[in-house]
Length: 282
Image (spheres, rainbow, N blue to C red):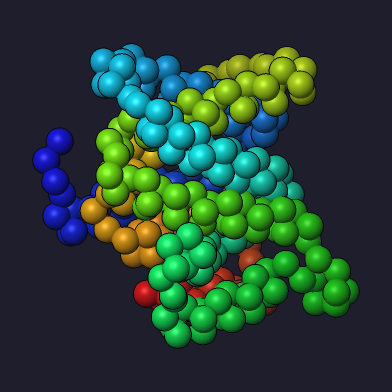
């Protein structure tokens, strides 16, 4: 595969942000049909099956370092998805989208921990703004001090996703993005298979549920993680995180349009502060 220009990499990452943003609304619908564990397993098994069929010959060339990188990325991603999907059972798609997007401010700090490259002052200011925005989203001000634990669970996914972005940026620099992305998705599939077996609940399919799984598996998972890993090969982790955070805006807008979600003044203010924090981080 030929090298991408920075603009092409940015466009690829923007497409990932768009499709991930649509995933919040589809996930909310699918959770009415499947448990969170079943949903995670089904969309990743679909993605894994197609990837292994399409890239079987390429996967034969994978070496130990590729598997190590993909497994690390996969574990971070899987745990992050568990927090996000479970959290979405008790929060709105808009809250989930913006809380997930808060990982953009964490990435520079985590990247600093991993590579010793210090974040800029703007990132510190953005982190403070992000905390304020999250406070507005998670605190019930009618009963001050009472947190929405579903939002806090969702916020945990942002921490894991931030580390996944950092790991992807580090590993994709000198490895085949298709191979490590495939190993990443296979790792998630195995983890979610174990969880489904432990849960032990039967699955019930219908037309809408099947379409949701196919969309989440083929577009929201397989295609997006291939594009993310490829795009991050040609840009920095911090820059990638900023572009990917646009999924929060897209997810929130679609939640209002299709799920008829409504927000209080404090919630909207929290959204605004988080979005400004994302811009400040850039």
